[in-house]
Image: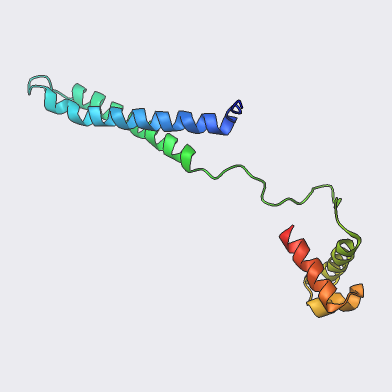
Length: 137
């Protein structure tokens, strides 16, 4: 069976990990670089400015890679549909939603299960089953 091609997110994560690894390797080389030079080669301010510029740029690359890898995934916050329709709700679930809408319009949008039983005409066990099913969904 053929493997599915990686998603764009997986490819970008791979690029970010590779960039992080290469940035870490370059940082290690840049830290060790001054120990390989003689004292005459490091005279003046130009080598130090160039060295600090390289260190800063490697720090930016590593920081960007870490930020990308630690970013939260792009998932919708809730499965609520924007157009107000409620697909795949049973008749009992629609009664519950209507009762909660009325409670929201007249108060704070919450109600006790006993109030829900009275408004919808459910038995206690039926209200419990419907609410449990809605909570799981």
